[in-house]
Image (cartoon, rainbow, N blue to C red):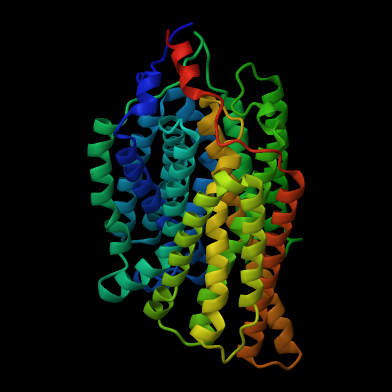
Length: 492
């Protein structure tokens, strides 16, 4: 047995006074990376004009990020466990900085799309490593609950505030600055991480190799599946453009199961999914992100196409959602140790669903304060409350060695859920609107009817997720299986 160098001793992991500074740094990085998944949305028309994208080609500015992030996250989680979380984090930050500069300086369509793929790959590399470091630094159950709440909250706010920041930057400067602004932040992280964070690579047996076949099959399968789902925005479910990649992706994922069962050192140990609580929270993460991403996307279209909001007005309109999520995170963090992960997660899902139902009451003449804001506040508070509890559930029973894998699985499910929400609910809404027009409805009334339908489907997904959590969750402790003791034992 050789030691690969968990260089920080057990006591230091628990008592390191720098851990809160590290949390602030890693949370800020996660905020910046996820922000770039949504920051382009309000700026898409200006990017289209600046680089000459067609309507179908413009989708790759969003899809390139989602495909790369969703397809590579599992591999990123395992690489962090094996080769070192700090090392992978720094590599991810470098890739993100370079890719952001490429996007900001893009002079043609391929340059922009390549940059967006690079940003998605950077998230896949950095996000699991970041969450894995946090899980190791905070070994006290109460501290870990607070730390994971802060981390998850800033990540969620990054997705929400992307709309606000995009509207402000594109209105005051240029769309290029939504990418350039990332570069100095990334440079600061590169300077500070080596000073504050010690390496936490796991111990490995001599001759152990990564499961390359499993990595290739799972990554290709996820990319194909997400790509096929995204194609439903333009093509019917029965078309070859959808069926071929979806069926191919499913086939590759089934092949991954066979490969992992036979591999000596599997990328994804199948026993990882034997834990019922982890399996349920990862499944319901699909529902959560499908509802969340489609809600913000559809609400933006409703505001700009029906209520005639400007990009800046629409962006600023999401500020209460960000504050509501922050309040919900604080509430969930405080109540989880008292009421338990199961109760908070289930109630949060159901409450967020009720917020979407409230939003679905909007009409053509809806006002912001009377029609949009009430549902936004309810949705944000309850959605935020689920985040600390969901992250604890995703790490339930996980050893230090598999913390990167656990976070990679959860984030992968979130990415796929977001892609599924856009790929399925957007076409459903648009087709419903077209049907309403054929039956004599006005354009604005028909569009509103489609948006309302998507909100209601999202509400059903949220409530279903809450019921599954209530029925299937086991008792969830906020403790991982003594990671510091495990590291100390392996490094003796």
